[in-house]
Image (tube, rainbow, N blue to C red; front, side):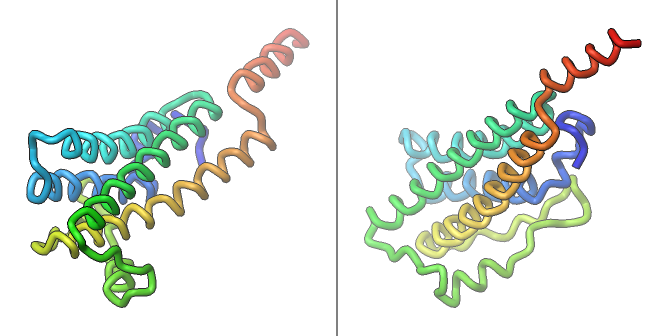
Length: 179
């Protein structure tokens, strides 16, 4: 993986970014369809989805590896918050939160949103049924959190083995002084 900020559009290749687009777009549709537009919940859910996506981008563009890790942590927290909002939606309306082994959830996990055309992600149709729609989004949010955690762990390992931005600049400065 290139250093943070090395390729400005490189974030578009990240699975976490591509899935975040789908989550954001479907969350906007979900909230417009099933949550009162004047409610704080509507705004909070859309903002959590947006925050998750935008922090992946902002982190990738950071020069500092520490900053990148921090912003991915914010993204992870935003998606955790969003997942809880969907669970609350289901519980408060007497709907069932489907178990991860439910055949319908397994079917949702088979949906592939990653496409070769980075500017045109595959956004599945939002189901008309609110219970089905919310469970689809719970599944996508759960799918987002796993690779996001792996991405953070990978960057933490890179930080341990290669050092951070300031540390590496200092090394370069010392090398310059020696020459």
